[in-house]
Image 1 (cartoon, each protein chain N blue to C red):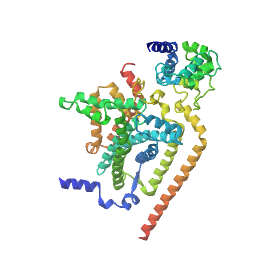
Image 2: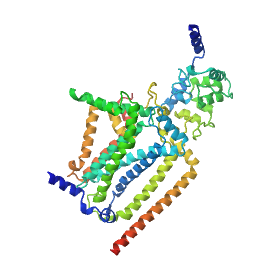
Image 3: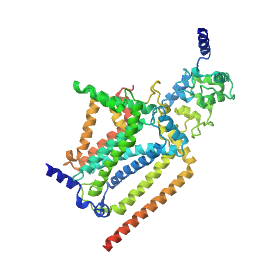
Image 4: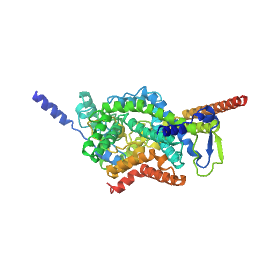
Length: 363
Length: 192
């Protein structure tokens, strides 16, 4: 048992490869029709760096209290020099990061990048995808406006609903979990404090730890082959691939800067949703989670909760165990699966609302 | 004491509120966006109540301003009603109370009557269009996304050029730094 574990680790962390030459100088990147997908991981990292830098800047002014959170965000946007730009960059890059992480995961799946000995790269990638979603969920509450608080309430409420599908002895457990996350009977100061701590301390620490392992493993094993056919052409990781990666980062930074400067993220929301949360007022119409949760949100609105709950958990489990479940599957089959998953995600994200109205009979 | 209470109540009734939800309903239906009273009123729930910007919270000076606004039947009179925001006051000043009330049955025509010259938040989207599209005429971060982008891009042309140059120079420098580091590494390998 110990021997098997030791062999597993030595195959995943080969000591003889742990040097600059093997990990950087002599590293080769395959060149083929799917080569563009090798840049998605770097782009995700770029957006994470933007998140960290802009997040740290916002920290100087943001007040994590229910009385001042919204006012501090307004102050950042209206009175701090460059505040609106930094806030917009944080919002836009959060969405861009989630998009890139999802695209990275799908292409890595289609290219069978989890093949032995790259299982840990895949598993850490899945963990980072889940961490990224949690970043999105916790960050959404911080502006303490109508959509933030009401959408968080809906999200946390769905945890409690799991209780109705559990045996009697366990039925109160989800409620306890919800109250633990929430910190009090309803979404309030305790919830904001917890989400703030998670968003700015706990999750970044976890992310950096997992990211370090992910990047270290990639440098150790190199980029996966990616295609079934033999790779005839390669390029040097250092400096050729790095130069291309860096140039792409520059272009993307420019686009992000212009978009953040010229297009307020909030312009896509109805203005009543951006007003400060009023616990005594009525809930405005149009409360929805961020676009990257639509693939989960609309099925929850249309199907029984237990169906969505079971499918979601099964999907996470399959994702985590993909290197072992799809060990013998060809890249062609994986590509078809990836296309089907992508089609579902695009359909629910872009047309989810229309599908909802069709299913519910135009209500 | 009771008499004072009755008097206050009677006074409160005398300044009872008139809200005009026809315009809010039209804006919401026309745009598909959620719209509330904050488009024209100080308080998002409208003028009824005792919170800030609502009838019940007004002092004597504010009530006087309210009455002046209510008496502004003709266009062109400066009004500063405490229950209305700048857009609400702008509507009354531009149209006058009489004309404004006429549009209750034809809320779409309010946009035409307001014209396209006024843009109170200076976001590049005229107030009348914001009314039609259900966005806030006093919030420069809220408006038609494409129009906001075009307006802000024109306004920030210099910044865009500067950031373009800064990015190109930075990338050029970093690329050459990488090439230099690679050459130095190759050289050290050769020496070995």
